[in-house]
Length: 322
Figure 1 (cartoon, rainbow, N blue to C red):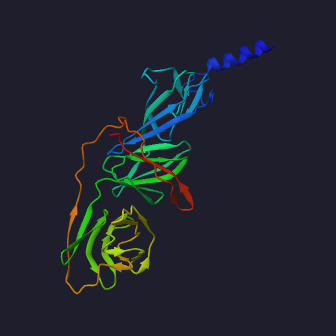
Figure 2 (cartoon, rainbow, N blue to C red):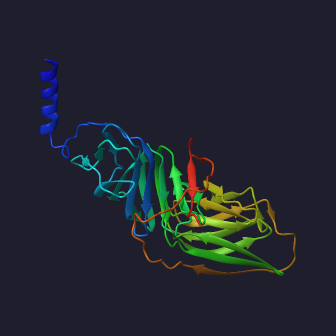
Figure 3 (cartoon, one colour):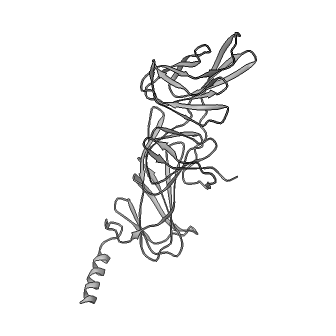
């Protein structure tokens, strides 16, 4: 009877086309890494590295429209696998080495008013390689400064990822005697009527645009923290980040157009001299787009967890190995 029962179960498994089966026939895959590469056009390529196993393994893919699935060993040779009907899962056969699963992912990023957004959710730690033009991104509304680094890694992450490419940089120069202080305002909103009020210790400017990120880079010698930021005389939420000892970055997202006022505690030394202001707007030129899935970046740096609302989200920040 035991042999008969085994044969019946085996026959059921054999008659179900594995590629169409929605049943889980393997163990949950143990993932060594997950890498998401985003290029300048919003194309996404994903790469999973799965640990070796003596048993079949189920790998749940990142949600989206999956295409061009490729399963190989570490030598780049295709290995036996099958996929679910909706391409949401891959069944990997037993292997002595790591298995590498790659695919393209569509319909996850959306662009509105020059801002790219991804409502991302995946329990596995995931590295994001960002377009090379991106040096600041936002996770659940909080900024993360990349600088020359290439991306972040999110631990067990459910987040709203937002970023912009070729964001205009409005540069205003405050001149006092032989001193020059550059104030940068990065935003897609129009900037008008910039002013530095020495007596009241404040920077002010008008923005024309709704719900756009506005990032202001303030020289600490010109205006020292702590700061109070107002939109039309009402306090608004802002994030202070990337304080390098000479400048501090202040990020805000005004819901409406209006006048932004940044008030500090200390200004340049008392003076009776004349203060003048000059300015320009720099719009970066878009680089040549690089196809996704060609990254060979290595993680070499780590930053601590970043507080996001009531939760703490951890990041790894990485760059290309030189």
